[in-house]
Amino acid sequence: MAIVEDLIVSEYGAFVGLHGKRLRVHVNNKRIAEAPLLHLRSVQIHTRSASLSAAALAACCEAGIPVHFVDSFGGNYASVLSPNLTTVITTRRHQLDAMNNQIGVDVALQIGVGKIKSQAANLRYLARRQPEDVAPALQQSSFDLLAYADRLAAIRAETIGDVRAELMGIEGQCARLYWSAVAALIPDEYQWSGRTGRHATDPVNCLLNYGYGILYGEVQNALVIAGLEPYAGLIHTDRPGKPSLTLDLIEEFRAPVVDRTVIGLVNRHYEVRFEDDGRMEREFRKSFAKHILSRLNAQGVYQKKRYQLRSIIQLQARALATALRGEQPYLSYTGG
Image (cartoon, rainbow, N blue to C red; front, side, top):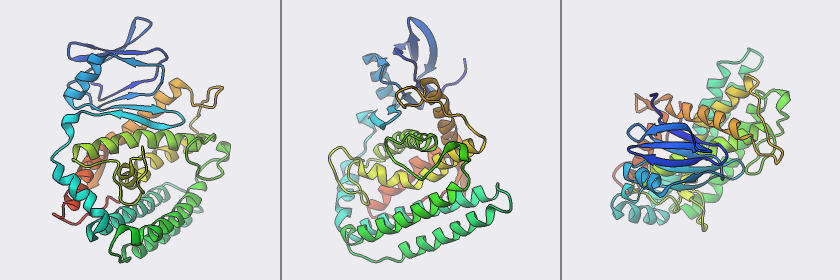
């Protein structure tokens, strides 16, 4: 039997049950998939018509396997994580204190710098694969982004509240620069008119949003394992139901994980299929999710060593926890 690390469930009426030490997926009483818990790293539920048995859910929690629910429009709308994954309360106390001290400022600025540098690194990567008439513009945009990163790193303040507006302003300028550069790489057939968030209707933005939804679950799981509170962020403000810290840390990984995957696909004229209600087709969502999960399993460089990107996310979450406890400075992941 093939090893399954990420079990994706997208079939209408699918049922996920437990059989011994394996998860089994049935549709109309016909088995369509099976995954031993020993090798499983996540369960991805990509349809609202599926159901899971309590035994299957309990087995996942006992084995430390997150179950992520991802919607075509709303992205990741729920994750089930084991309560045994969280560590001592000390880390969370320091995390909350960081809202009002220098550690929080330093970490927030580093996360912002990491996001911008990862965008710059992605443009450099893409430039190496473009013809001579396109590459120079991408390289120049990359240099411009690095200048903004240096400007952000030079900011000095005592609390997050003193720096948040300026930080968000620079991030906004960088986003416009980055997506303007990316626009040159998207074929006309996709009718790209710019970056759009939730409830986008064009193919490229739908791919990006769905990919971010998958990445979101991976980042939130890493934060919980590191003992952090996903709903107490630094850059993103607090709001009921808003996992602010997840939204903070995901910024370092959007470009190297999702953007690079989507841009690569559309450059190969990847066909995006939709249903009548505007959602991406059920089987297509499963196919696309495999591309994102494959990218998470690809290797990147972290502190001069090679790891899977999903392992780098976990290492970075632990580094964030260590920094918030004041044990070492936080160094962002730049995707380079």
